Image (tube, rainbow, N blue to C red; front, side, top):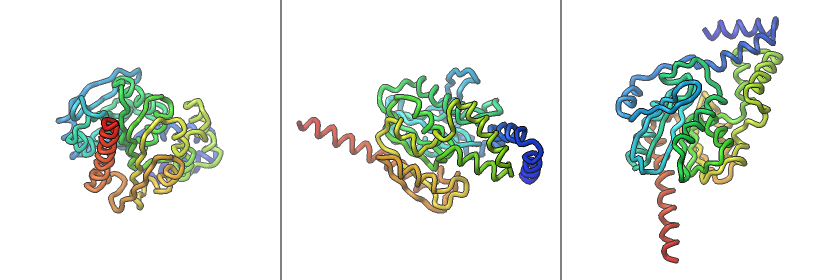
Length: 292
């Protein structure tokens, strides 16, 4: 199938680059593998499900943990679903957090066929606005979900406590360039694809870059976790973000894989440590305030 797609776009780019760019943009928005893994299905049986109204379709949300605990949102990646984050969610729930997971459009049990960073950003903001947190909340995100998170938070004044990116793309222009190279799209066709994207987003693509979003986001801490040998998103993306974001930390792991990291014990322990360290820090501040 991949060979056929590459051959088609190589020929179409040469004959009709505008048409090829339009078609490539449509294909780019379609998750091709929405399969829910067997080990993920158990999550949907134990989590409390609720829905949030949205003009596209109801947002499928799932709740774990103590409703009075600190709010933590989990945002999954492309061609994945809420349950892919369930090992993290269950661990945080056991620690007393109020955990909310949800399926992005065209993912999980969604009936939609297309999604993009604009639609996913809108859905994340809809979830946040529905929950209406009165205190700073936290977000743990994976891969494409990290790009969605950064983009969404750059459009809101909500304050975030802990941000944890389990890998993250950086520049959207680089994503499109890598995609064009993979499907054998010509330069002219790529330009048309980018033109379509800018019309959809109503802003220049150059400005959509995770390493610059920190200027618009109110946050306390950012932790980036990245496998040094990640074959889906190179570690250079997280390094670029780390280099630009104040109050950030970069933690490398090895031999876990892009998806398997979500179930890796060391990764789960590092996420837990980030929250427990912050809790201890806040307690120390409270004791200091009481002393004076």
